[in-house]
Each structure stands twice: as C-alpha cells, then as structure tokens.
Length: 311
Ligand SMILES: [Zn+2]
Image (tube, rainbow, N blue to C red):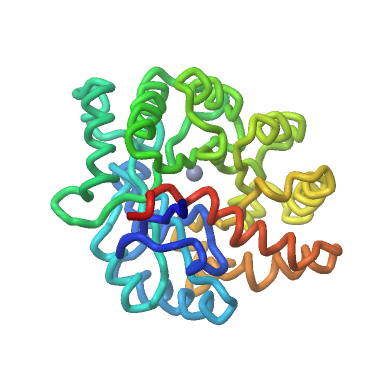
C-alpha cells in the first residue's frame, strides 16, 4: 500500500515531490526569547524576499519545504497555507516543542499524556482552530551536550504520539550534539528508526557518532549548509563525501535551516537557494552522481515523510 505525505494543503503521493528542503523556517518569531528582531521570518519586512526566493527555488527544481517551526516558535499555519497555494509549493508543517528556553508554560502544566494528546490532535485533526494538519514532529531538540528533564518529557510525549499517528520525527541536535541520547529515548519507546531524522549532524564533527546513528537505521540531516560561521562548507562536503563513500546515501537529507532575517538573500545572506544553486554543484564537481543527488534531495525525503495510509 502506498503511503502519503501530509502537507498544509492536504495529502499527496510521493511522486509529486521534486527537490525538497527538509529543515527550514519560513514563518517564525523567536524575538520574545532572543530579545532582538533578526529572528523574525514571514512578517511584512521579510515576506517579499522570501517569496522571491521561493520563485528562484522553483526555477532550480525545488517544490517541497519542510517547515519545522513548532509550538512556541511563532508558527504560522495559515500563512504557510497561503504561501503554499500562491507559489505552488508543497509545505509540510511541524508540531511539537523546540528546546529548553523556548518552551511555553504548558510543558510544565500538562502531563506527558496530555502533551501527547495535543500533538496527536495537531496531526490527525488540525492545528489550533484550523483544519491545517501537521505532517511531522519537529524540530524537537536537546541542549548543547545536555538533555534536560523538560526536553526528555517532550521527546517521550512525541514518541507516544508517533505511535498513534505514525508521523515522522525530526530532531534538533544543538551544534550536532546528543544524537545518541535522543536515540536512546526513541529506542526505549520502540520508535522505528526509519521514521526518525537527526538534525544538524553536519555540525557533528564525530563521524563515528554519525555512523552509529545511521547504523541504527535512522536518517541524518546535513541541514545547516551555508552557515559557515559554525563549520566551513568544504568540511561539510568532505564529511558528506565520506559518508556517501561508505554507502549511506539512502539515509542522508539536506537543507539550509534559514532561521534569521540576515540569512535571506535580500538581507545579504546565502538564502534558501544556496543549497541548490551552489552546494549541489560542488557535490557534482566532486564526482557525486545525479542518481545519488536525487536520493539526497527527493527519494530519501519521500520515504521519510510518507506515513498516511492511502484510503
Ligand atoms: Zn534546529
């Protein structure tokens, strides 16, 4: 039986998706936590530049974006639906909670079971009072070299909700750390590895740990491509080539994680387009085949994101 991907405009079969970005933010507002206004996306100031980039992405063969802004991060399901319809883009919106420091009060007020119920409702019925359904849990995160008690509570609520819905789970590993600890929780809860993707692994300079996550059977994401403040793209590429050489091309997915106004092209940044306009060309120059690039950008996201049973 074929399974479907759940987008903000409804369910689609895998063969509809082309180039995909698996970890992005389009509508987000973290200013209440960070106390500055560069972490706002999708407002009047940034929206025209974002729409321009969506058009450029289309020209580069991209038509699907996984939007991992979730509860407490200024998520905007209605605006995402509008952008999806107006720009003919498939957008998958996330549910869940980000990480310590960004949690709304309900993390303490509700039990694990109550959190689970809330997340399940967002996947099965719709977010808040809309009929827009979440199609993924994410990004759910841990702190730098640490998983706090609240973070563990969120991971367990998500795992329990996953058992009801089957929706994929995408994580935030702060600067690439704590993947193995995240895995421990999923393992204990009996989550199938192929429905888990560990985020920000391109910032994890421990290739043995990356391989351990891959051997478990999960996906890993090279999803901060272009953020050279954290790691050079040359180093990212060498890391990626090594994993491809070792035969893991069926379990890796790519993205840029645009999370600040200043990363947009219009504000002088590398933009969402950078992955497709530049990084992939670099991969090809290194001898990576079109077939493997299709796996990294289309086929792997297809398998990871599909979960709704066809009716
Ligand atoms: Zn993240």
